[in-house]
Length: 106
Image (cartoon, rainbow, N blue to C red; front, side):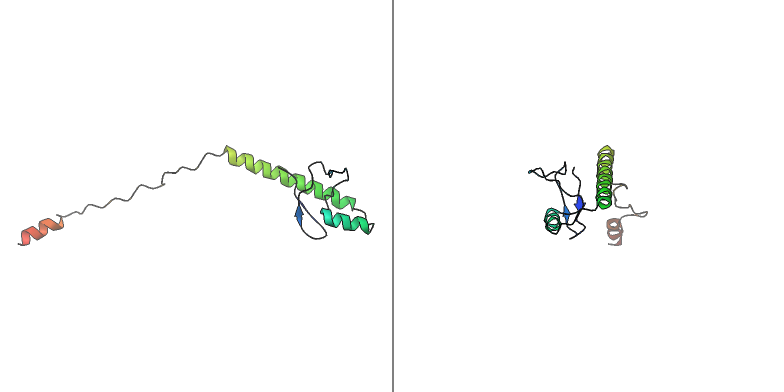
């Protein structure tokens, strides 16, 4: 599983490369998606380091929680497909059956 981030500028969820480096060697941002990162670079706005550290820590914590939940689901036994209560059966009547009653009336 990979780290998932939310862009602080536009609110988009994005998956940067796992090593936070793009194919050309430039660093990926844990704070901004690539279009917003490009826009900020054009305007010469530096990435806020405290926000980047918090974003990385939050993404790692979410990844660890997801992995732990996945492991817990794998360890739990499969649900029992059998019903939890017995099947309903027809109740027997206490008295004679209806056909006997009719035969006695004739």
